[in-house]
Image 1 (tube, rainbow, N blue to C red):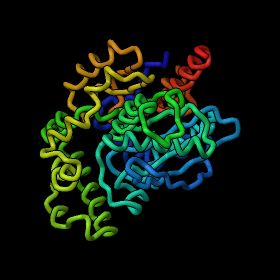
Image 2 (image 1 turned 60 degrees about the horizontal axis):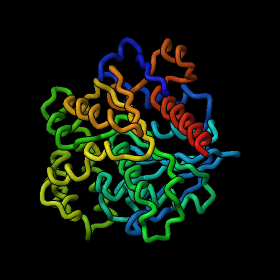
Image 3 (image 1 turned 45 degrees about the horizontal axis):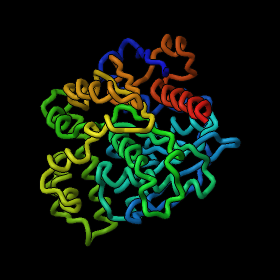
Length: 357
């Protein structure tokens, strides 16, 4: 089983501090913590669900034993998502091919299409379509889906969609066994509860404001590319995460309210029904999500043998920087506890697959 022990440095035994420290300080120093360099990527334009173009970066090492496909959270681009680059360095060094992609309305993908986000409803299919095209390009199976924060939500949707591959009418050059499963870090699981919690929490409200500012920047960037398709007056009315979705997202998806939309895209209800091996790393002190979700997360996982929940006391939101003592105890060569656990778990799953065959 994947190692469940985690301890941060003493000064990071606070979810908010762990989150902020990782996002701001570690972001400028991560390269010093690794003895590896990033792979040399090939730029790829994938065709996602509904023929939406998706920009990605891919690299295949010699003797690759599988492919990890990943994306990031609610805002950002491949250019600045350093946490995803850490995964790429570690995975490539461990002989995994990697594919990283800008999801809908983000980064280079936003330049290719005006299509806005759907928080998993279509992005889950994008994971599958990317895997299908990557297989044709020579990327080795099995494919493993991953992401963190909202990207973790998208990856969970991808794992869900993997269960219906054989039902596609399709040009997908995939079979169900080509998808190994997935691993997610601090995934968004219930947006309604978490957003209500965030705006009321003394620290969370500042996180929410920061995310809203970034979402507004994304919207104006899209308007710059597609002035006739993105309404500038709607952007001006955005003053929260929820209002961003209300003004720009839900109508095109056929939802009448953000509550209806968030209920539809939240992964928590379908976790008990996932049939692919899935690792969920989740911190009790995560300041982004409503604490009440933890009880339901445990219930969702306890009767599904395909789910492995690693619930830690500390970690913050996509923090998980480990102390030196923790690194020594686990034999980790760096402080990136979560990615080390993800790769450890994928390795365990590969052994199970080989033994099963």
